[in-house]
Image (cartoon, rainbow, N blue to C red; front, top):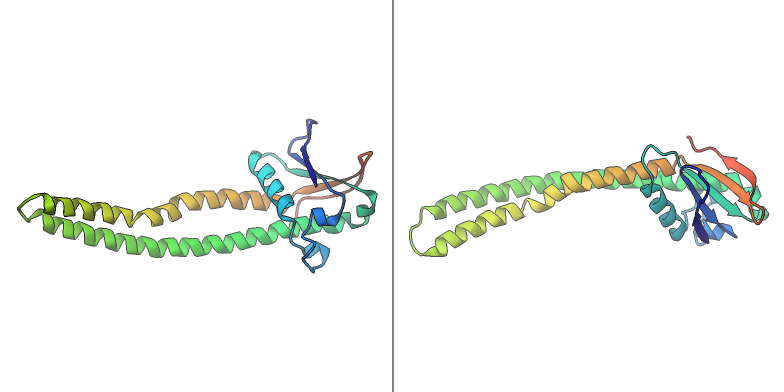
Length: 194
């Protein structure tokens, strides 16, 4: 599969050149064409290209293919939309699971932080060499380290996940245009809104 970016001034157009369905969809998937998983390389390319575009920029996919694939153009466009719709739904489920884990980890982290702070206050009252002071500082650090993962999940992964889901949602509705190789005449077009 050859990939190329358009040199035309068409906003949001991503282009693929394929010779067979196997370059767009996983040939080992026995599902009907409109339900097949996409080829990993094609999926990765589209995710990367769509992720580089501004969120307000309309997306369009132009696929250059032999005329023999024209008969399946609408079904393949439906397959692209369905693949990204399923990927989006799976990502939403994983996101909700991560948020539940983040809340549990936050609870555990807060308990550890509170216990560490309490033990630290007890050690502050102990007079003597620097051992107690070193342990007190170590407990403070331990308490904050326990908060690291919940903060990462609930703040940073939340934002990244939101951006990923927006890209998947856009790809699930992308307009697909088919052109016949080698003369690139338009043979089919599938709307991108569902």
